[in-house]
Length: 84
Image 1 (spheres, rainbow, N blue to C red):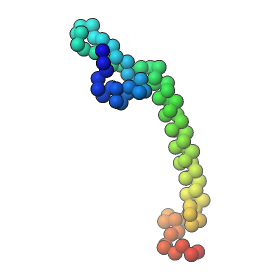
Image 2: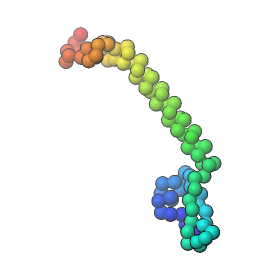
Image 3: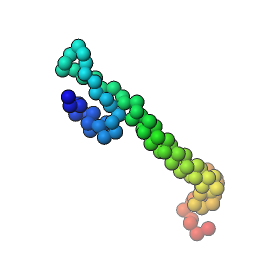
Image 4: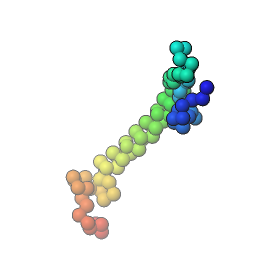
């Protein structure tokens, strides 16, 4: 039995879906999530989450320190004059 066309493209490589036959209908098939594959997905999401947390924390420190021009007012002190 071949998986649906969309399952192969979207989930096939990740093996997120498991296909099962439907007992009442030989033509039917049921696709369910593969719990074993979700562990890998969770690990990947955790890595992405840590990366964004690191990047956003660094940007927050940068912005609170005054950014590029060293100012902390609401407009960042930028008035077009970069020769300060």
